[in-house]
Length: 113
Length: 113
Image (cartoon, rainbow over all chains, first blue to last red; front, side, top):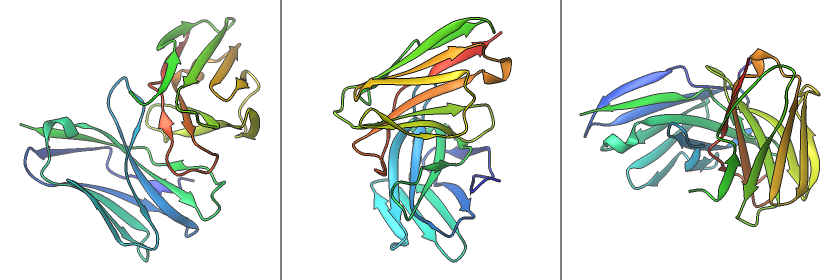
């Protein structure tokens, strides 16, 4: 049973517009969430994170929103750039910091010229 | 460049072969991880090492055998694999076990014939 779900396998967005990547989770004990970005032939790299005590975290063009009641988080990229084309993984960690990171299946983002 | 290297980058092996994957981290981290990424599946944690001691084996078949001779090096020894073991194998490290951010290597693309 998947605890972290990314229901859109792929997403295409025009360059300059906003990209919104969604992630849902089922375990209410998750309290820290991360987004990783992966280019082909490379490992995932950390992008941005958010603690459950916040509902928003911003870093440049990247903003992550957390809705705890809906068990939903989203990553907003604005404006989208060609270099943003990659696979984005949502991940979650439980309250116990020894818990493993649980990853979603990923969403492939295509930025169209 | 994340400071985590993996060799080989690509490996093709028969079911009766024995091979090893190597991971090295240059970050001074104390925890190292092996993940498996199969097509259309989330990243699956396989093993966790903390200060060279294995702290987690996520129900991985014995045909996968990890080895951590020191905090900088991690191996995954492969023996009598099955075609369904074909996947991308990713190594990661973090300062300590339970740290939110893990640094990933580029992965080894394994094909079992």
